Length: 52
Image 1 (cartoon, rainbow, N blue to C red):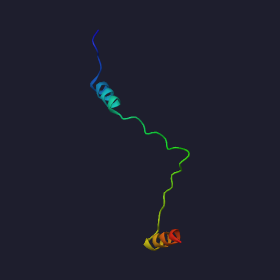
Image 2 (cartoon, rainbow, N blue to C red; image 1 turned 120 degrees about the horizontal axis):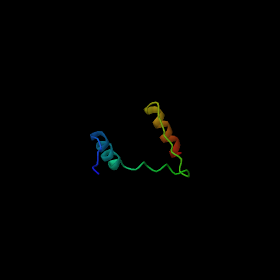
Image 3 (cartoon, one colour; image 1 turned 30 degrees about the horizontal axis):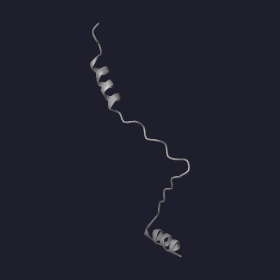
Image 4 (cartoon, helix red, strand yellow; image 1 turned 45 degrees about the vertical axis):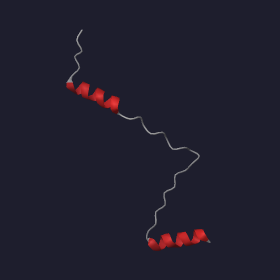
């Protein structure tokens, strides 16, 4: 019996085969922390307070 896959099905099969695995979820014991500074003065104040 002949393989009667359409061009779309063949394209989708190639895409699925080439799709990388999903990234692993972040470890629960290491929380992610994003720091946002409103301006350079706030950054300087934080740097100074961490050194004290």
